[in-house]
Amino acid sequence: MPLPFDLLLALTIYAFVSSITPGPNNLMLLASGVNFGFRRTVPHMLGIGGGFTVMTALVGLGLAGIFTAYPPARQALTVVSVLYLLWLAWKVAHAAPPGDATAASDGRPLTAMQAAGFQWVNPKAWSMALTANTLYAPAADLPSVLTVALVFGAVNLPSVSGWAYLGTAMRGVLSDPARLRAFNRAMAALLVATLWPVLRG
Image 1 (cartoon, rainbow, N blue to C red):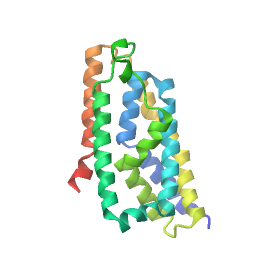
Image 2: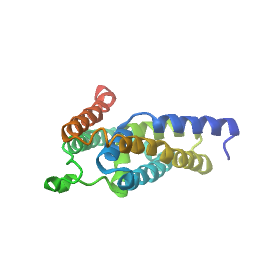
Image 3: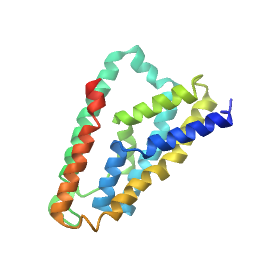
Image 4: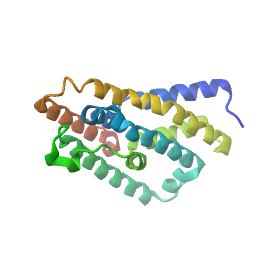
């Protein structure tokens, strides 16, 4: 059953606000824009948009029920999420300055597949997907779930791209290696800070 217009509008606003506000994805895109530029960050953005759209659809079709039925699976996901976010924060903090060949292994942005995979260990992505499906597709019927996922897919990419563009615009200010290192470390600290609601709960 198609969503009524007022519900569709509310969903679109929720998708925009939740997609554009700070979180692990957007902080990493900001850092990637600074370190690699907008063009090299495009696969990262596409991976977020595509990966989150698929995740939202699967959550709406019942995947979240696994964690309700089997709590240890949720605990395992939490542990994996924390460890992966800490590893990403370390990578951001130690990112090589552009053109630095001495740290080539750290000198690549996330690929589309890596960014898509990250959605599954991103606490904010889980919260967004669960909330969207609970509020806007409570019957969990296929048309409603797909509508929720497709609205997020349409809204998410332009929303997150603003963060990569902002990072690219900051490249001139952060062309000094010392300032870039300070920025990367600040971004890493903010990434770690996004874990607070998870650890507190």
